[in-house]
Image (cartoon, rainbow, N blue to C red; front, top):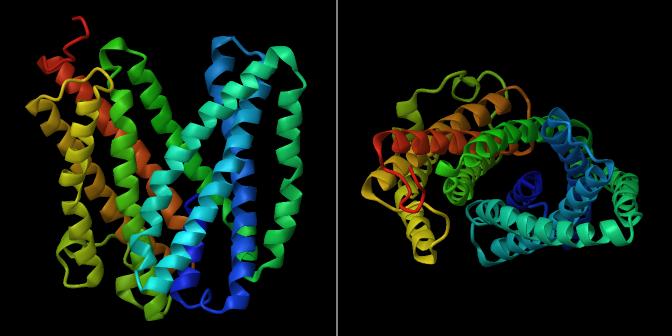
Length: 364
């Protein structure tokens, strides 16, 4: 879902959404584009789940595979539509009240995306599972219905100039980002399958969500800055640098360095709120000891530090090579955030177990 707010943010910031006649064309084109991406990625994700989850174990069931495909495609379609409508309202509203939509729309997209998708997936899969025994033909029909709509969305997106190019060139970051996130999912699955580390499942969405939100904001701000400044794509060393100096990324005098510092300093208070909310709700099995909080914060800070540095490098690198960072950088960065967050958190749980800081209600 990151490509929709990224495209609309750019179009809003350069004034393309200020004219009433252009708004509806941009809205319809972007919604159609994201429906195409959501349907295809949802189908590919279900196939990947079947390939890496069931086939190696020898428990393949064609009916369950169709159920997974139908649930994945339907969830991706509905979630993308709902989130797309919300994002359009947020971006247009932000522009009209004078708020920079880069600071509002991107974190909302990252946060609500996970919440809406997980809630819908649970509801849709439960409903389709109940139909599996009663009406086995429902799941194939659901899957075919959403896949059959794909050519319609392709045609609509093709007719809008601002989405036509992304329709044909924007698949690489989406698919690679899905593959990177899947590696993080495998790490999570292997870790939480151990009863000693079951509590990790509660904290993984938090660390990944916060990291993804912060880096998405920074990448969007840098990309907008480059577009608004009309910097040439060649011959500018600050744009085409291959490996930026970390000191320049975080301590430079520019506006992007200042925003990187602000976003980095938001990590600790933001995570403390989530940690104590989880503790108050007694979610999971992990006891919030001072050692656990210290290791967790170290993992979160390291994750965001790496992500902000990569955002500075990746956005400028793509811009310098004629690639629109709005279409390419954010999917890579958020997927990298999932991988780093899950990996660092799994490492923390293993280290805490070794040094004796273990869940109070999990036996040794």
